[in-house]
Amino acid sequence: MKSVFVKRLIFSQNSKAELMKQLCSAVFSSSSGEGIHILNNSENYISCHFLFEKVYSQSTYNIETEEFDRIEFKRVECIPFFIDLEQSTLDVIGNKQQATRVIEFFGKVTKYRIGIEDVQINLLKLLQNCVQNKVLFNISKVKIAEYSFFDNIVGDCSLNLFGYPKALDVVKKYEQQITNVTINISMEDTYSVAFYKSGAVAIYKDADSIDIQMIRLLKQGL
Image (cartoon, rainbow, N blue to C red):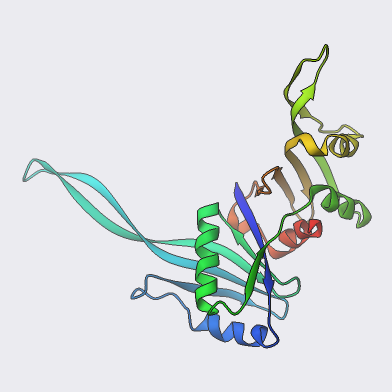
């Protein structure tokens, strides 16, 4: 499972033309311990990896001294992200801490000349666009807070709506009380996506299996 963080980019008149040059000047090096590796550069988007060295340590038993030694070693970590020039967004695949790290590095590389704004994907807007564009999906699970059962008994509940023909109506009715919705979206591949009340979006796929087209589909909810 990987989370997707979407940020709106505010470009100035010449920012897009300068951006590629700035990214190329920030390639990973062992001296800096961090940098960007560009995977794909097209007219509409730039696919990248943010690479950084992380120090790990572990204890190992030394037979000669009969004591435990502390050994440190470095490993290069990788965080995938897209710069979507068509929709002017920065899309990071990872956890919140990793997203923050990419955003901070992106700001440093661009000398903070490109504005970054928070945005949130609206689930209902996304699903309505899927219906209009004939994208196949089904709502599998919905978690509702403060659901009224009977005799004024209120509690949280989890509904399995897989195959239920009126699942979208349930989401519309309890929109304000929903804490978590899981949907399955069918494109060239099938993606299971969870939407949380906090605004977080998680895709149950490996990072390498999440492409720009899938993220652009999710951004129909912006």
